[in-house]
Amino acid sequence: MKSLRYIDDVATLVLYEEKCIGCSLCTEVCPQGVFEMHMQRAEIVDFNACMECGACVKNCPVHAISVTPGVG
Image (tube, rainbow, N blue to C red; front, side, top):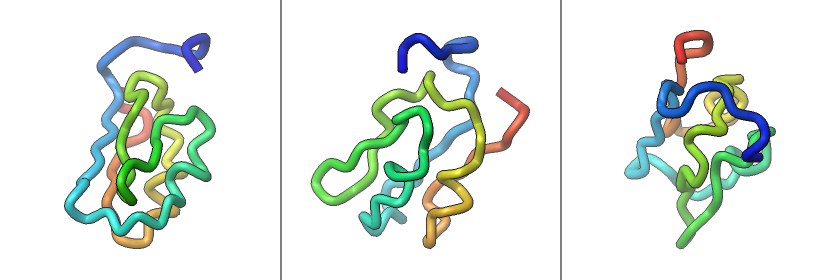
């Protein structure tokens, strides 16, 4: 979603790839399409689209994602 941007490189989103179990919940709940699955692991494909809503964090069963809403 290139049309919905705030300021590039300010989001607090972090993906701990080593913790990812490939459940794909982050790709399903992210309203901005920040994540995609590659080789059965989540990857951030559009970091600057993150609006820090926290949906990915709340749905990740292994705490492989962190974000501090309202900071970025």
